[in-house]
Image (cartoon, rainbow over all chains, first blue to last red; front, top):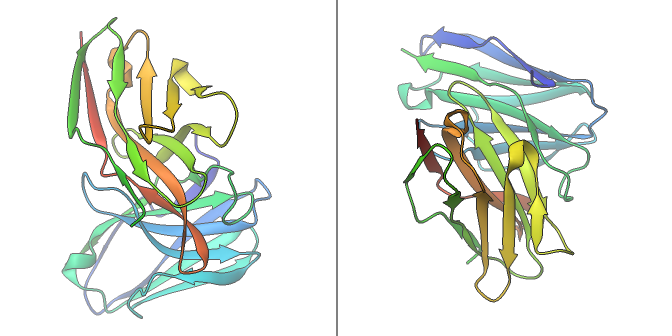
Length: 114
Length: 115
């Protein structure tokens, strides 16, 4: 089982809804990531938090809003999404950001926007 | 430009036979290279990495990878494939982009091991 826990596993939301994705890790990692993955494609980096501060934003639309309440938790707040935002959203963590330590991924939240 | 290429969309191999999944890279400086595997409805799992040292790197589940600097390759190998190895495999390289280190993933190779 993965050491990075993501909830919910599945989410269906309308374009006017507000929802949040949650991610938790207890490995003492100081870097946490959000990735978006379309079917049969590689993950695309969205955000990176390092020591609870946003260090990378890959020009993600403002309808996606990340939050890192503490070193173990990472949220992704969703508002006014579009159908093309439907994808698997993966959370990951690593010991430090930008070093050679591997990423530990959660199993993702499969998001469908109707 | 910094990039990773996985030239095969799919690799088919019979159970018990050796397998190779190919990866080539283009990056400035010394490459930090990784292989990840993704099973259906799962996140990616780390298999192995090359940072420095021995060109042959051993990883999880009997996989290994060979770093070849002259050919800028980092092919994933396993001496004897199992049906349970069937999954999507991603090669990745750490690259400095926009003043930050990021992981660049290849397009992925689907491995199908037939009984």
